[in-house]
Image (cartoon, rainbow, N blue to C red; front, side, top):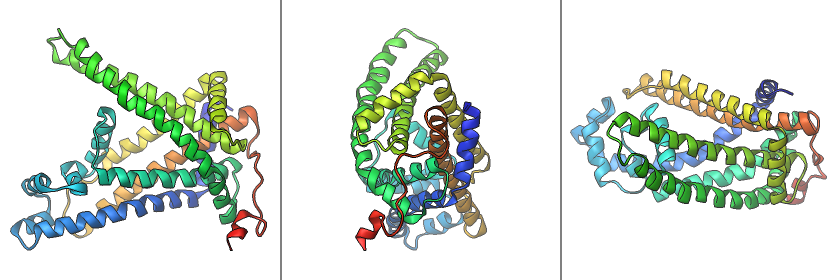
Length: 332
């Protein structure tokens, strides 16, 4: 199977499993709503019945936003002009590339979100790899089986990414970059040097992402218990199918970039109350759904490529539990 075929197969599998997309969107919503409720309370308390409340409701009061940000704490410090429309995407990208720390409450919510993804990842990959419905008992059985395995894999990921975003990022941008521009007098040259380092850092992160993605796929498809063995198997598969694996990853990245580009074109700006506000909200939610679907397409296309090279379509070593013999029956 070629990378293009694997991408098409992955999109087809995601399209046949709309419940997965709805499920991960619901997970995203459940984690986001508590933060939104807290933010609403902070904004309502600060605005009160002042004149700033009227201007904030009718549009955007940047002076008031700056004033609020200077005295805010916790999740309130994230409320600034960069949360509006496509600026939020650029702000997250900038924070990612420059390793900017986020408020503790946001880190805590992100940790819960990642934990939720770890739980559902096994069921999602299992469903996409089988390319047929597994029903609720089969899905949650796979979630339970692979959750603790993926927790062990997450520990390895944490060590690797901590090294990348800690020592490696600091060496590239705090030590190497100042040396590169020490005698540079042209701003464009300094900018290109920093872009080059961003590319190097991005390649390192992408390489780790590919390895861990295929480790998850091999763990699920082959029912592996050792995550170190799954990582080693993933590296082996990528090294033997380097061109196909890298090309497929680049195609998935281009698909993600297309979704982000489309959102950049249609993303709403600062609107008013009423229909304009709800249109902006729905547009943002459609972008989130599309972004999550692309995330599932990554796993689906990688599973399709792996199955076409070392197994066959729809093959998964672990049998689907059948009610009432499934582990879910033991919980009744």
